[in-house]
Image: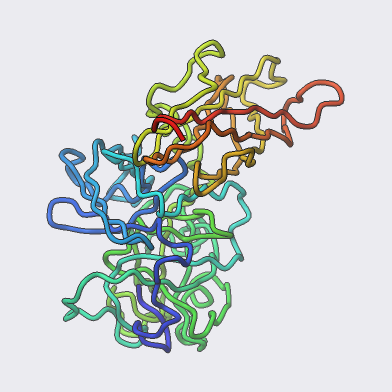
Amino acid sequence: MVATVIPFTDPRNRVDSGQGFDGVVRVTYEGYFGTGALVFGGRAVLTAAHLFPNATGSANVFFETSAGSQVIASSRLLLHPDYDAVNGNHDLALVWLSSSAPISADRYNLYRDSDEIGQTMTMVGYGTPGSGDTGILTSFSGTPLRLKASNQFDADIATLKASLGSTMAWMPTAGTQLIADFDNGTSGRDALRQLINLPGLGLGPDEGIISPGDSGGPALLNGRIAGIASYTASLAKGSATPDIDTVTNSSFGEIGFWQRLSNYQQWIDQSLRAEYPNAPAKAADVQKEVAESDSGTRYAYFLLQFSGVRSDAGQLLSVDYATRDGTAIAGSDYLAVSDTLVLYPNENQATIPVEIIGDLIAEPDETFYLDVFNPVGGSFGAGIIQLTAMRTIVNDDGGF
């Protein structure tokens, strides 16, 4: 991760365990590495498709958390079916883990709203460090560092393409990528002012841009993944050459590109749902009691079903949900979740998994709840504003 003004060694750029970024991981594949983010459910990492040119074999995922370091091999790689390497389109992949992620690793939900443009995001990754004045440190040979910086999502990529035309050699799909330029506070390095008349002098010492090794890393808005780092470019238009050195090396005046996850939530949600182990397919399959196991996590499932009729075949339905303690305590007995569940066209049910924490401690059976509320596109029935279900975590460690 390259930052402006302050060096990468400054504490403002360093990411220490326990800061909410312990789900940002390093992903290695065939001698190369990138970055990824552990998504809700703790079984998959979201990253960039271009990290896996062969889409076969196994990747390794490196976790650094408050509980220490751990490496987990992948069990499966899934690239977006429309991934287009030539034009940087649909550059997303899911890496399934061969075992559950560390309990101490943060899990991230998706940023689902389409209001990202104009918002300040936090980018986190293992990219090669450097400075905006000179670009990446090509001589850097130390252990990959997890760093962070900020930037603002400035525009959709279609705005840039419309202005540059054939000067921009690739053909991006409108609405699928977000862009941000790397400012140093001067108009001469303000790329988007010069290229599309969108002025902005940056965030001062907090500003940064992605660099090699950040590919697949998250751009977070309010702790949710809004973008996945994809690539950078050094662009010019006529006499306007904002890049400080005209070399694509993550220096001032360059532009970063992120895959826009609000456009991809259906592919991500449904890909995850298809891989939940032993998920219930109908109400009769739902298990209301779940043994905790001895280590790692296992799922307790909740099944949401829509029994009405859509007013439009393409209509999306959604509900918000959140877990709530009973005698079971979040963080000790299960991992708390809260998010929005979306039912997509031709989809009338979906499961919500909650990770149950395994241990060897003998204790009483314990309960927790899932509250479901704020239905959009449907209702729970006249006068009903919330549904609640309970699950019991069954002690499997003998007497207590």
